[in-house]
Length: 124
Image: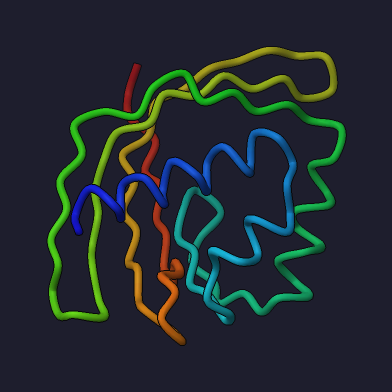
């Protein structure tokens, strides 16, 4: 089961990379909680769609996902932590970074969805 959660997380990142909102939406529990360099917020589906669409001209590439640790907390709750290495292209400028991420996955109507995601930039 723990490998399934990591595979769902990878599927989520792939959908972000390919700009596949339908897959991202299907893997997200709304409202979801997001924490990162812009702070902490609870995001409903319309707000999430707006955030997703705002990055339409940007490109994201997942270089690597590593050091994953996961745990099934209950039959309908799992937590996952991992490192992700990313490359970005925003407004013609390229950059890269590495983050420590955590996600909480819950089972809703027999489907696993992400209820919370955090990203912490790592020092270069």
